[in-house]
Image 1: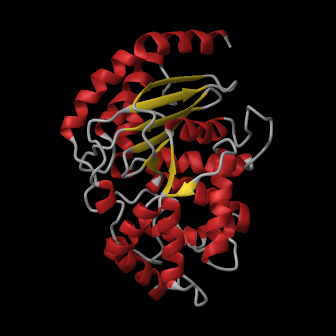
Image 2: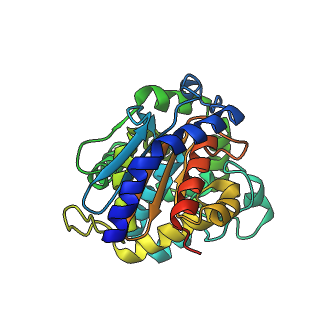
Length: 317
């Protein structure tokens, strides 16, 4: 505990300067313009919340900026699908390996047998996982997902940003291609309506939150599925283990290996510029930095997490 308190003291002292140093790296990136509603996000923004097991937070930068989860949501839909269906059913539809390709690639669905997505954190895998969420239709599935996310974020209801949802749905030509290919390959079942599956997918990607709420969600993962603030077990530890492994191997798209070497933290990024990261048994971390590099990760956010991990020796490796 003394180590945590010392680290929090150092974070309060040094984090403002580290944030400003990392903010300079935003100039190397660009805001995701292919989702029109995200194009107006301030490219120079950078904020971070680090939360410990008592709920104590160190918050610096533009943490009042709300943002949508985008691909970060894939971690939690995977967890919900595992809770709903179990490992065997989920991994009959999606693999366990890094793809080495862009997050929205369709290439290996055709080239590699058996034609299932390589992992749950690329778009193809996340669409397949979304189809496995229990519910009588898109509305019920979305309600269950939103309630699950809200519970992990501390209980305050999270909502879908309708403007971002509509923007994604209107321009998601590649995701539609992926989903129909999954239907052709029987990854989506005969009873799965492709547009209904996509509707649920677009909506969970457009769920909006803050750095503090994201850090709270990360904190539950950092403590093996138990909320340390309430003592409640929210997710089976086995499923959290699976999710954290995917975060290390696939969570930063096809820059996951580089991030593992430089930061060594389980993390998941989204094209809004959000990053969820965690230090096992210690901290949940939420970051927002909308300017992205060519791999789709926040330029400033990645630099900031690397700085913190290297300073405190947080790497798992």
